[in-house]
Length: 419
Ligand code: SF4
Figure (tube, rainbow, N blue to C red):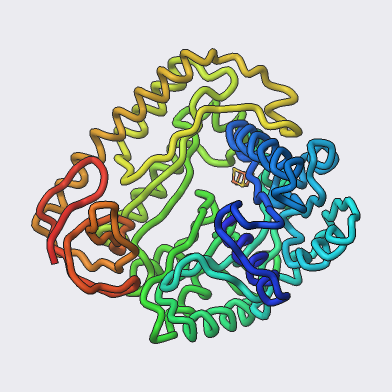
């Protein structure tokens, strides 16, 4: 989501006569696009901001701006720390106005909700040529007790389907072949529009464009995944066979404390339903380790769940209290650091074994890969429909080329193959 917001801000600034540079050397203005999902990311941008302030004092930078969720969470503090302007995550389309005022010496906090003005007409400076992130719904109504997103990115607001399709038409003119529909709660797309629009229908409409070869979506909430969506992914050849569905914990007690509105049994049932309907589907997930009051028994339930489901990929995060959330206000962060690290490492090790085992299924298979780049060793890499990274040697390939690769070696990480 932040990458997509950066692309919009860069596009607007470029259209208004700015030059975008990718290193601080030679930059007059620096804009930090921040993330507050974990304490670590917040600490990181505080430290980055400190570095920028030093550069400004040395006369090597003129203006410092802060965008993203950090702006919504601690705008005044960011000004105190040395930012010249702070722009909210739902106001990126106003970057030009805000920056113009900052250039005149004004100190600005701009948090007005202008998310509705994010539309297909806004210029974007895309970070990849063949692939594009397309935000289809902003915000989240779920209020998981550990999460700041509903406070920083606000309530759910879907973009009209026609506007999204207009954006895709423009992307096609730029050579884009793959799109990822984005939303904090992407499956809720269309609910607020109350016109029958939903994610499944959007995927169907987007797949009608001949030039679009693959369609992805991120991130799902388990109870929002409908039978219609599963059917669409199963039947539509352009829909990537990949679901990212955060489970967060394998303990029903912890899920209740997290205000995740499903049980592990419902989650397991959902995964079974998807696997029954979508051939060779890849299912990935997120888990938070060491949530307040999580006992060894709770953790062991998560371990058992991970063993039962065998995710193709698992993102693990250690719990850290986020200011302003219910969990930080009412629950004591009582699992000590060492124990959190032990639980994290146990799950990491387990997931590695699962990855190694699941990847062996790909040996000698031919996979359809879209080229994404080259490694330091001069090999090409890309991914297949199940989000598997494949590395292979080749000559004269371009980003976005579609190739068939035979897998000749597997690891716990990427697959290795030959054209
Ligand atoms: S569904 Fe996701 S974005 Fe929404 S509150 Fe829960 S964790 Fe945060």
